[in-house]
Length: 147
Image (tube, rainbow, N blue to C red; front, side):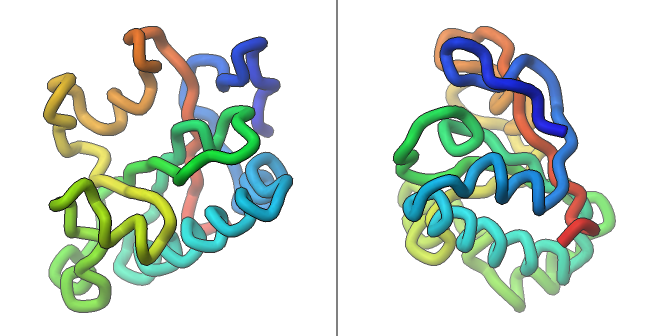
């Protein structure tokens, strides 16, 4: 179950498990958000097809912003066939040019969870659990088995 958003529209700190159905209900409450969800779903299905089991979702997409520009997230490499991912969909491994290829194809951007975000020195999993001021905030974790 997704916890209630705080007064600033953020999830409380922590990693909150969610099923796809819960994610849809929480994030898909207008046409813009449903479009973003469609891209996230397609990316999640590709990741699942190459052995990914865990996807974290972050940003204004999981918060209360009515018209987020995209979604942000990261995925666990454990159990994945990265060579197969490169063959099936290299876009999910392309991080150049501000991830323009990912945003064009999937309407958001996803990173390996254990990769270090350049500006902060934190892994993306840790980076996504901090707001712009460095304060803790929550993220959602999706077991891709729920797709």
